[in-house]
Length: 120
Image (cartoon, rainbow, N blue to C red; front, side, top):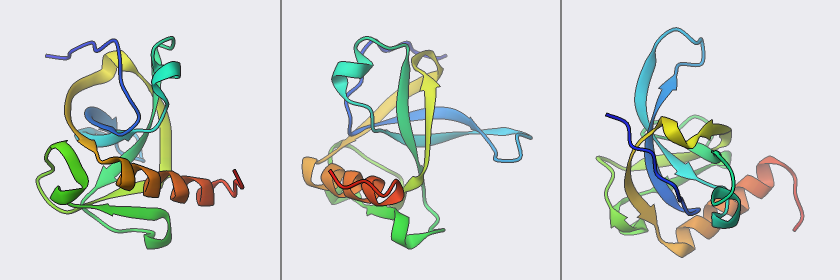
């Protein structure tokens, strides 16, 4: 059963049912909320990055282990794919499973800046 959360914060780790890139089939996957609480409080959508246990593009990914979470847990060492960012409706969220520590979230945001060649 899906839950409809009204508020998310950047750094939250949630579970969504994501389609495969070929759009044939779906799988429950963790993702990291990137959009800020201010936007999340007024929008029906949230911006997220995929989390996977596989490395694909190491220069554009951030490793996350148990010590990087301030709450919750991941089943194994994982990687935030900062190159795989998308927008989803909040009502597609199954559950929240954790939250990144502030320092690790800052590291993710730096890699996101690199992905988009942003100098902020």
